[in-house]
Length: 103
Image 1 (cartoon, rainbow, N blue to C red):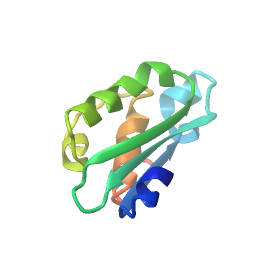
Image 2 (cartoon, one colour):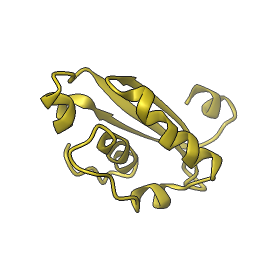
Image 3 (cartoon, rainbow, N blue to C red):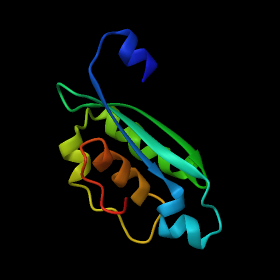
């Protein structure tokens, strides 16, 4: 986010806390979050931050999305299984555009 702002890019930020993710709560791991950064002009996913349970298993989804130059529309269109930790990735992307389901 800081790098994008330093480049004078207009960004949209989405966040989703694990405390409202059913799988995280059921696993007793409600601490953590997903944060995504989109270019506001193009909709391109330009960055992500994750902290908490299972994030090392989840980050590859965003790495792939950035490599394939995915936009918010691409990510919003992906079906994320329920209940999973990865739902937080979808919710964070939706949050950047004011469309969260569980917040």
